[in-house]
Length: 560
Image 1 (cartoon, helix red, strand yellow):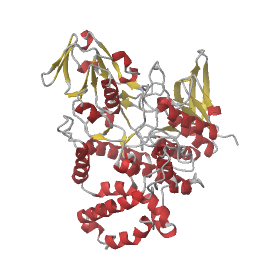
Image 2 (cartoon, rainbow, N blue to C red):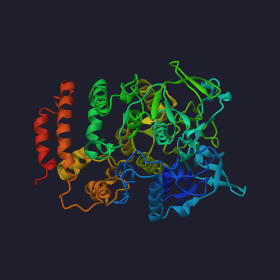
Image 3 (cartoon, rainbow, N blue to C red):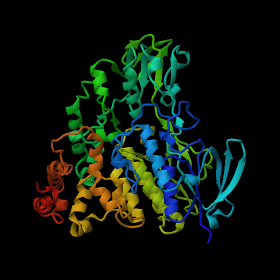
């Protein structure tokens, strides 16, 4: 029987995961990548390409290696925890070479059109038209299509919100066009936007500029890459922490986390404190911004009121003269011009998709969007899980709910997002890392069975429950089970500490498991609070939480 052919649009991290998942499920993938190499967003290019994101030379990822890796291919132990874009590309190439993915990629090939075949309601097939760099067009027939171009597609440049910008005598551009700071030495620069790109560019430019002004409408809560004990922050995003956040009052979790952030630096004192709570907006990760503000090289300003020649006036009436450059770090919009609007309609960065993946009203579930989410966490393991689910749906091994049920789920998520987040085009595809991963894992049947593990292998269960939610957890059982997953979980702390141990030292190094001793105390406090706030609900299930924690204490506290 002929293998089903799957078109994969885009050769970035999501596209590579899709190729791998197709091969794992016995499908025949063909990946169309419009540029001359794999890597997508993470491949640095001096000259940005049309309708795609472009990074600056110094970009370092905001998620640590153990949390961002593909689930059956750990990042080498000697790689740093937070990697430069060049090392991310090295890892992608290792992954592609190991699983022989590149032979399925057609470079310099742009997808012009993806449309349903006339017999789609019966066959579920798609006509795909492509064009190579010589201008030669080809038409293909595919049994399924996976869209992997992400959401950093079209730069959002809201010039209509800035009166006088057309007559501005300096230079302005979107953050995608920023590459290096040297050109702006001893110049006056304004960066608009305090997301991750805006914060990073402001910090880097402030080292060479005469003065850097960071303009923000709302302010922002600033997180640190470096967490407690010098460990990567996202290693503290555990299953237990996610569960506690879910059952504790929203205001309490916000107040607790805001208190921790303000201990590092007072956001109100630094003119950054927003009106919204910390979990009402996608936070900004930046280790250096407080230092730059403290040294005066960055000045935080409100929104811009207008431009007058080279002069910029802000909403508070303050004025800066002789401005040389304005960088718009104002995000991106996504669209799919090669798809008909009747297939999926995008408006104000919103697309109606079941689990942010499947159009709910197609006759056949043979189209999936991969990586179209904005997590507080890594996108790579999410895209990988999505691709594993999608390929099983294409094969008929997994079925989607009814159209009515999918539409209901979409409406529920839209309502929940509107209630939680401040209104912004940035918050239309927001997901919480662990809950969303588990949601997709449930669809595949690969969510870790923690209760069963507590009975059969308590040590592994406690690593999964109290340790970082690393992707290996989704290879422990079910379809796509990987024999190395268990060992990868047990050795993850060795890979965390390895790149930092670069100086021979006769002193005994701290045991990675010591983190669990600290986390045990935090967990006990969190569980106690959860019980207090949910006494009525938990009484029947957890009559004596102290005793329950005492039972596992021996596994958390290894004997010296």
